[in-house]
Image 1 (cartoon, rainbow, N blue to C red):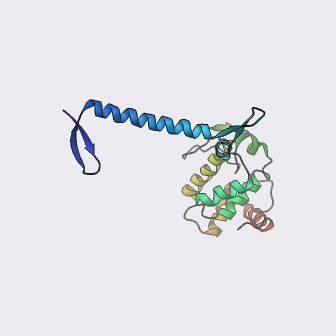
Image 2 (cartoon, helix red, strand yellow):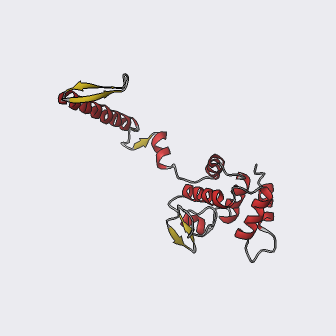
Image 3 (cartoon, rainbow, N blue to C red):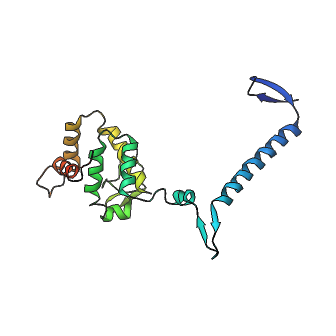
Length: 188
């Protein structure tokens, strides 16, 4: 005898193999039909026989495409402790999104590949961490913050960055550079 769990009554009830097979086939048809239906509405054909994709398809294709606005949203949505500092770092470390490390590695923050912590980096290129996409770079920076910066106040946070992100060729502190970018771009 076969039994089937009734989610409403929280009991097992007798059933037949034919009933189980029928339900599975019906479920498959419903799912497959829904997928076909959704796919068929995702495009329309123009008079020139060109496929014009709907905004949903374009959004799926370009989900990882970069813009400063998308970066801001991702940083603020991710829950960084000081998102203004993180956004300023992105601008500084990517040389206003023009550096080779940014362009070739999808590395927004100029981070090196982590060796002693969890990382989303897929390797090292140009002596910096390389990511599948820029969103992974933001997530990796969040992991870094969670491990090393989470318990710090704003002043301590900036001091830590002075020690870890400071460049030898700069005479000013990294935190001063961050604060000037925050002020210049009115980052809140």
